[in-house]
Each structure stands twice: as structure tokens, then as C-alpha cells.
Amino acid sequence: MRHAVRWSVKGIAVLAAVIAVLGLLSLAVMLLWNSLVPELFHGPPLQYWQALGLLLLSRILFGGLRGRGWHGHWRQRMWRERWENMTPEERERLREHFQRRCGRQTATGETPPPPST
Image (tube, rainbow, N blue to C red; front, side, top):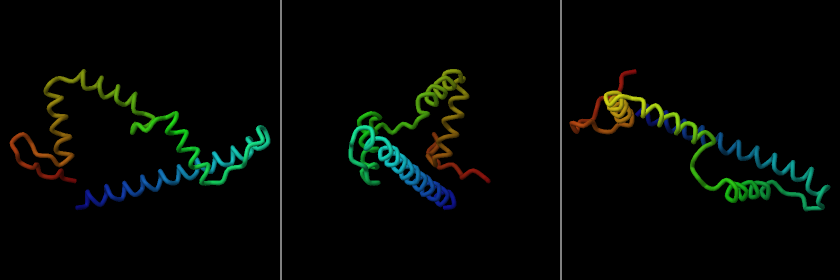
């Protein structure tokens, strides 16, 4: 039960951080646009929600909608190299570790006891 609460709190914290970062980025886009574009190109000034829309549109057009973060490629490469350098026994221990950690059943069909803290 305590584990579920901890993940819920972490999830809420991550969501709040994402919203805060998105808000700050939108504000930065709005301020930069309004300080540069109207004077240089005689374009219209942006409101906050227009800046947020422009930010999301640029993400869709230029960044795609992949779920990967900024560090996805090197982290994936690192884990692949570690996996390839492991012995079969080490690989099996790692599989069992993650199965226990994720609450899945062991090969015998029993649910492992929760780890002691």
C-alpha cells in the first residue's frame, strides 16, 4: 500500500513539474516573440495561449510525438552494452530482480514476498 502511495505522489509531482515547465516555456516563447517579431517583421504580438499553441505545434512538426526523452538514445545504448557484456547467470539474476521489483510472479508461479526495507 505504501508503495502505491509513493508512486502516486511521484506521479503527481512529475505532472506538476511538466505543467510548470510547459508554462515557463510558453511564457518564454511569448516574451521572445513579442520582443522580436512585431519590431523586425511587423507581425502581430502573441497572447499566452497562442504561444502555448505555437510551442506545441512546433513540437509536433519538428520534434514528433515520440515518447522518448532527451536522453533516450544514449541510455538505451548503455543498457544494450551492459546486457551484451553480462553472463547468462547475470542476465537471469537481473530478470528475476526486475520481476520481483515489478510484482510479477516467479518462474514457479508464486508471487515473491515484498522486499524488506
